Length: 172
Image (spheres, rainbow, N blue to C red):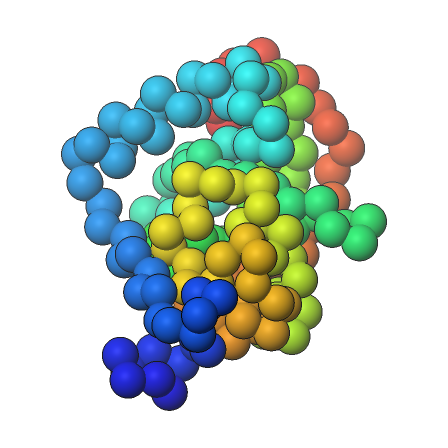
């Protein structure tokens, strides 16, 4: 553990610690998510999808924009802000739905170990530039730095359980 009370190794080239930003839900973030969701729905944001989970308490569908990582021939879902609501819902259900344009597909999920998550997180930070401040490791950090902070960024392997289907009724 370093002097700031964090478990990850230093992430700057000079060996200094770079604190990760903490996620804080806000009205501005909800507005931003609503705006980006329009662009994702239209298929205009690369690697991004609308993730739908079932509320673990309400049973109602909950939708969030996410970035999906392709690595080693598999698809991965990363929680850059930590164990937020969609993560708890996904864990409880064991499955999620991803939507982009008119294509909708259900996936079984498997949460992976820190060792398996490390390379996926490194790839994620390269493509999801807006979430970089939430990581201590930088895009140029070694995989070991991502393994060290994997406990703060859950990673799920996605396995298709349905074929792509078209959704003509908006979100489901």
